Amino acid sequence: MVKRLAAPDSGSAISRQDNSLQVPADPIIPFIEGDGSGPDLWRATRKVLDAAVEKAYHGRRRITWLEVLAGEKAFQQTGQWLPDETIEAISHYLVAIKGPLNTPVGGGIRSINVALRNRLDLFATVRPVRWLPGVPSPVKHPEKVDMVVFRENLEDLYMGLEWERHSPEAAGLRSFFRETLGINIREDAGLGVKVISEYGSKRLIDRALRYAVERGRKSVTLVHKGNIMKYTDGAFRDWGYELAAAGYSEYTIAEKEALEKGNPEGRIIIKDRIGDNMFQQVLLRPEEYDVLACPNLIGDYLSDALAAQVGGLGVAPGANIGERHALFEASHGTAPKYAGLDLINPTSLILSGEMLLRHLGWGEAAALLRQGLEETLRERTMTQDLARQMEGARAVKTSEFAQGWWKTWAEGSFGVAKTWPESGLFLSPLVKILPGSRGGFFVISLLCPEEAEYNYVR
Ligand code: NAP
Image 1 (cartoon, rainbow, N blue to C red):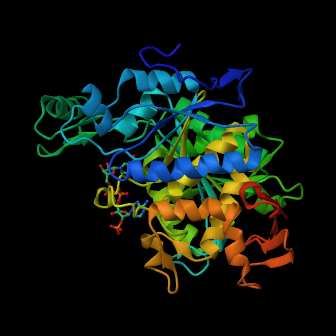
Image 2: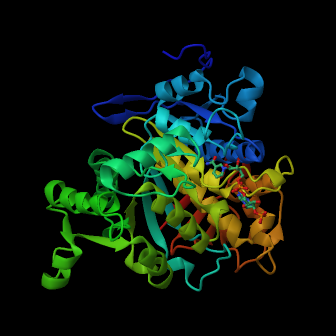
């Protein structure tokens, strides 16, 4: 049971049985509002998620949100940046969502995000990167980008094992290197330790492989810097090939073998790429890459660089996944200069909400949410960060953007229908068909605008 945090009056807890998630019709889902622009982001996200669930299930399913504290709000109310009851609530309810959190300066905690990942053993960051039609991008063919980055979250250079140059620990390490290994390190050097284990690497790569098999993806690329860091990144690569051969042999084939013998069965190709090469590969030939498995540092850089290719962090969703828990979050920071101005782009957090809905198995609501977004963008209605990059786009506030989103599913469709054929075709006063941007079309029944049915047909 959750200690010290009152359970909500309604809703039921998600549970696990035989390694699978048991989701009730009224799951309790903890949320962390976030610092800076977090409250604006969360307000918009909650509204869109609730509307999508309502539109998809007509009251048969609904989420009971439970606020848990972290960051500045937690510090103001409890004196702690990350109260124990927040960890206990997420541990108990299994699935949660969060806005961005500031990294406290001199606050006795290195990073609340890192602490959350460590305490909940959220070992994988998952970042799907796919272009949304209408979003301005710096590359010529953003539509060629369709990758999912699995980044190891707990090891590598992010373990906090580093010491300031004049500290006794750094001095002790320097003397160990000098006396035991015969290596001289400059007196003015700070020191850090890179840790990559077989256990940590294999459980991350296993997630990426399993995802590729389940979703019918074409390749899994192990990204590393093993030419230089042989026993850490190089080992990560070797363990990846080892795991694919041992645990997924019927589904996978190593790239070298596929090049020599062909791949007539269409197995998932296991590739590896050195990190610096990978950065140019994803720019030059993005269509050749699909699922990526990366150690922490390279994965961190690469996932942001990929997000830039499809329009930036403002539109890139993410999740932190463990064996038991999943915490969905925006991929950007708190954007403090926009705090309270109702100007921030909520797309990243809303699409993280889409990932959450899919994680619950609520695919209908998730599909509605994405289609609503595609429609809203097709109307060239966007927040200022995107609108300023696009001629003819209409810049709206965060709250208006969210409103337009769910209005697309219902009464708003009356308005756009007037501009046919651009916005769709009225078959009768009661049914409207809108072309979808991914080859399908939307059928909207307008019997009663408040209760409009909305379906997507491929
Ligand atoms: P940031 O908050 O991501 O913002 C940097 C800039 O990116 C913003 O000024 C804005 O650019 C643009 N931006 C980011 N998100 C946007 C959105 N949703 N809509 C529109 N524009 C957006 O990065 P930061 O300034 O480096 O970090 C601020 C704080 O956030 C730090 O304390 C950092 O530690 C924390 N942080 C938290 C997380 C997390 O919680 N997961 C992640 C990263 C950083 P323009 O100024 O060009 O408009």
